[in-house]
Length: 283
Length: 307
Image (cartoon, rainbow over all chains, first blue to last red; front, top):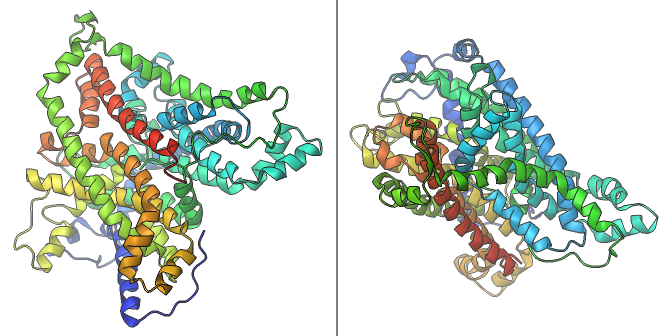
């Protein structure tokens, strides 16, 4: 990691260039989200103007109330939270031992195993949709939480493993060796030496898996079709009619659905950057 | 960086008796999940592609061998979807590098606004693709969209453009949306590369009298090559498989044929036309494309491209 935040002597032109670059980056990243916040606070009347009125004349929060009254959005939210948290727990629980074995044990065929993990991370979800649907239907799991938890955990597992292998590999081997000389077993070394040291890695992997699960759309759209089992990513698309797009309402739903992500990113930005630069992560 | 695929762990820790058994148990939960939830459906797809199975014509069943692959070759809609996918792929992968690399350079600048810049960098990456599609459909709205408003105010256009209902413009709008969403992924990978460049190397170049442009092209860019390659491969994979954003745009734009990617065509064939057999054959084509890119990646990493 770089700690080069030391003040540098910059010419005024360089200073201006730096400000311009950072402003472009910040505006470009935040603008669509901020525009949705502004849209969500306007009435239909204020919206239907051209040239566009940028700021709402008064803060109107009624669209947020409608998000929850017109669709069971609180239920969508609870469903997304349950599915995302449980799939993250399942994924990490399977990824930690696997990544430890791949990073630390003298495995024969380790290269082949790593290649297999990478290949699994590249599988197109849409190609698995129909057979997975039939699998879930056969197991009587459609419209249940496991119908999403199992695929989400499996789909994020390769990313979780690759991220954790990178973190485990960075922990000095001597620490473990010392513990093992002192009579600790292999499993003891994992739980008492490696895991505590790699907490940041585990948190990072968990965050990546959680975001993947929270954002997934295709499987959620196809497997859990009962309204009470819908997740947030599908829920936000339910406010539009065939020809009607009540944008203030849609915008409010978008904001509610995205706020958890914005908070997670703001709190854990360092972990996210570390994770995305450590493991192979799909765009 | 991505862990090397084939570097075996050093032998300092002696192989203990029973280590093979331990490895088996450590790998078992992950293997069970991957094989049960991903590999099994994948193998089913291969089998299904050899059988007719169309819910709307239930009397047509049975083994047909490679017939559905032959059907694919003569299917104009498949050809169009494949061409669209490749066309969008070139534009969006290229676009995400044109935007993402400068973003990474900006985010790497020492500044008090650095934390805010990082959040701005992460936000598009973390935004659900479907929600991104919805947001941009609103930004590109013909009557009240803010992009039209800005373009009119700036004097680039006289009348608002009908972004989503004009075929060429709807493609442009979708490409721009995907570029916004994916540039930050490129930027994050490149930022990781930038953080790995020792400051001394850049200072040495400056001491030797290199201009900032020379430093960038002769020192920084060559050192970034591995990160750029990794970002390029991952972006190519996601471009081949792109589904969510085209799917959202198709709901809003009449020029659907122009926006249909291979992923969307598979979805419609399977879920809307209920032709499971043909959808499976199309899926195998998408597997093959993805695997081809994966093979390039595996070879790249194996050749030590990221060391």
